[in-house]
Image: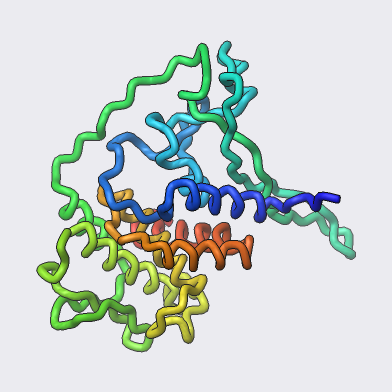
Length: 278
């Protein structure tokens, strides 16, 4: 008898499959992104968020996605033999408590989408690169400056990068110590991601996390925050995805199916806090 997978297990399984097939973590890219937008729904024009970005980004040359029904409604069809990508959405389920009060609870659900390139009879809009008036590193600095209640940032005079909650301080090596400015900003954004967990900000449980090399939930939150901010700045991380590193994350995702969903949700909040978009 086959046990039905939960929504969390479906998404985690899909993410693990992507890691195993590409040999890379979706949030670590040692190359420049295609200058097109993040994955968007072709019909609604809305950009996908959080975990869905990790699942959809980079799978095809176009970032336009749609459901089977949407393709049919547009007068097209999904090509025979093409496999869709499972993604998530939150369904607000209403119920009444013991006192008869109506309440809502978010339920994680999944559905399948197809890339526009997997369809026939669908007109794919021409994508053009966004025009930026300033270099990527200046866009990254602009993101740092938008962090209104930011911790103090100590740059240089250190061979370590860390966030110190007790002093509310981020420490990063000097830019000259990095081979590529992308790496520097990825590290800085990672530590700023940690800083959003301070009690004066988003108040996450960040005790006993810093100062060790264990891949904890908070570490994943900070990594994903850096990923989202780098994408906002038009740059990407250049971390070497070793086999051991990949194996470590696959093991953690398998052991805790809810990890990636919870962490990406927290990382989205962290990135928005830094971007002053709350």
